[in-house]
Amino acid sequence: MANKNVRKIMRQSSGHAPSGMEIGEKYDLCPVCSSGLKHWRTKATPLGDFAIVKCIECGFAFVNPRPTMQYLMDFYSECGHNVGSGRSEAITLDSVIRQEEEFPNSTVDAQRMIKTILKCKVLRNQADVACMRFLDVGCGYGFFSREALEEKRFDVTALELASNERLITEKMTGLKSISVSFEELEESKESYDVILMSQILEHALDVNEWISKAHHLLASGGVLAIALPNFGSIFRFILQENEPYICPPAHLNFFTPKSLSTLLTKHNFTIQEVQWVSRISPHALVKRLPIGKAVAPGIHILSKMALNIFDMLHLGMMINIYAKKES
Image 1 (cartoon, rainbow, N blue to C red):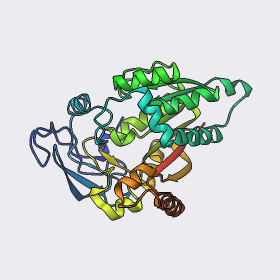
Image 2: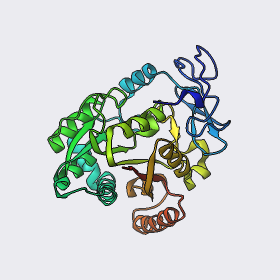
Image 3: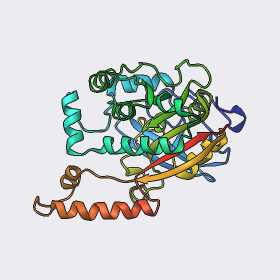
């Protein structure tokens, strides 16, 4: 659980927060490293204006004051998994597979992350090869769970609150994901060998609680793999609060590799590897740029080259961090 000594918490019923938002905690110190905070930006949204602060030391940025858990549950119940996506049509297994075939983003990410997890996970004996316990937190449509199952080295448990995502995951993989939040998951100590948090920690109300619980649930030598938007990306530097991933209340936390590594180290994890990943759909590129279909392939090739350079300079759109619970 979070260390209450590293921050001052105030319960509020009013303050600088969107109209109608139930205010929970307000931090006077950084929840990651206990350093001072400064106001970074105020993000205007259809739901109101959200204040975002930034740590002067580790660079962690976050919505402050925080909403209550009930406010978040009501928000996701009304808006669903695809909030901010602009998609209004019904999401089905066929539409998910069709979109993935057009732009295999999730599949590529899942293959890379599972491969890296296996590289980081030192197997104690031959029996471990076929019995690693794998927890997919917020499995979405199930692409990462599917990849783990296809490796045939993992016993997969998946968590997902959204009912449609659970249904699609079951249809795609045969796996029945559990409708429970990570906070409410009841498992004994050292229940898992691998915990995956892909595009989910940015939503968490209490990041210390999540990482502390992950450490508790992992066996010795277990791996925690996290993927989320990079607050230190070139696109965030250019667009500032208008960057698409700065989207409260869906996203509450904005990490750089430094701030995420600091959080993991604080909870006794050892960083194994950091990856920067940038990818833009060709369809999205054509849609956003006034270019003809004839030149679209060339523009896409140039954009991939530019994104590769950003990744090499550690300015990519996403970060993947792999950390180990040491013996």
